[in-house]
Image 1 (tube, rainbow, N blue to C red):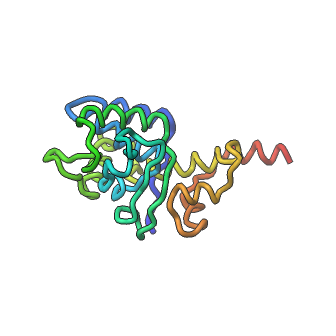
Image 2 (cartoon, one colour):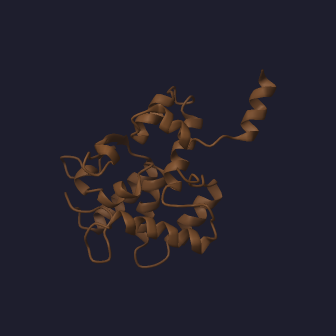
Length: 192
């Protein structure tokens, strides 16, 4: 395994969001960023996400996403609660796309699904433009998992909940994603 993708600070995520908000595909681009940072999706999951996975039976954006086994790594689909910012962006994109019930959420310029490689290259382009070194398409996912692990006790949950959100088979895989926080470690030692 190579060097893990960088976890982004909140300011860097805001810079990325501001940059992708410019141009012809601004709404789609915002959804790509939110799927990575607010849902922890992998490039293959972003590329394969279908409206049928985010739209409820009544044709509205659901409160949970169903990541299908076919697009998830190792066929480990999962159900993810929808972050409010992601749901809002999906509502706007869904209306813009004339409320489809199926088909790609994230369309390529030709109208079909983006490929996982295209999603990887899309992130690389924007990270390079912003001078964010050490970042990759996995940075949003790693940031999501790290932030979730830091906040899970406040929600009354455990690392097992983070593991399930990430779609990992083993909790040891989830642990490898979590970046430590030196300031928190110092505060913790002082509390002992």
